[in-house]
Length: 423
Ligand code: GAL
Image 1 (spheres, rainbow, N blue to C red):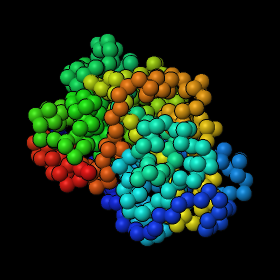
Image 2: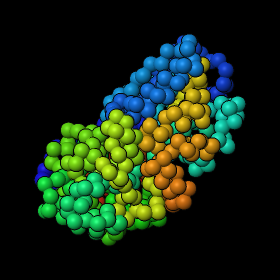
Image 3: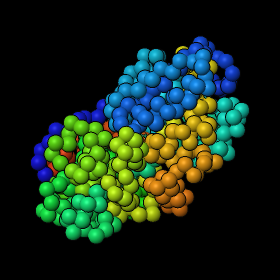
């Protein structure tokens, strides 16, 4: 593998703003109700379209409220999360911000940066409306702290069927070994990129699929617990495979975000890309690509039957300047109508259990089915199983690995990261 420079990730450590958690009342509170500043990282192709649709509907239903879109560019929130930390630490929160269900949200909760939403949940009868596992991931010490909008799948292998044909590959790979073999065949038999990659965070994203594909669901899940052992021979093999897979990626990857990497597949430039299903939203709109023609998908190699999940949720920060309007935004996020407007465009399935299934076709119908029947594993890069400090330590180790390709050193750093940050 050649040396390369990747866009680095700036994940801020959990902030330390100490503000008291008051129990949220659904009516009133400080602040004007005529505007709402919503903070996310949904700026690029696909994500922007979905956010705009949700916002347009919100504005239609709340004509007296101006929606201020405070999105900060950078896939997976690499830039947004550090901007957010600075704002929270300076006591200048937006009215609502995007946060991943799980360990990431817990960071904000423990730093006292979020208002509990118990009475909002009660008033809007939300406890039964959402998927149970999700509610667990946004609840701390009996209080619920955010409103989940969707469920995304991280472990998806997108492929270009025509390029696989050219390389004489009948079926996409079902194991890591097969994957490495097929990447080699694309590289030797075609002039295409074998595996398309983007900025450094997309290598972290790839790593979680490779760990899951090598270790299996129980082995992967165990890694993120206090008993997790990162020094095993199984992890060594997984990291060696990670290196071999990276040998087949494009060298110009470093300056582009996930959209460019995913687009290479539908544009016929790359055979494979491992990316979350926000890529599906992007493929359909604005790219207008056709399922099973311009692209196909399967669970990433070795992970069939396991849904490597993550979920976007929106919060009510302590000290939100326009709290009443923020609560109206959260009502929009929580609503069946809002979820059914947003998710088919975003490439995600709804967090609500009563969504209109007829709106989820093709890939999304498959995703709904898989979610209902698969085992679950939580994404580390997208905030479910690792807190921000742990994630940041892994990112640093992966950044070094992309330069020096030393799998043994990577493993050592991952062992250290777990020792320091596993809860
Ligand atoms: C994830 C987020 C998704 C999508 C993706 C790429 O972290 O949960 O909604 O935005 O990043 O930006």
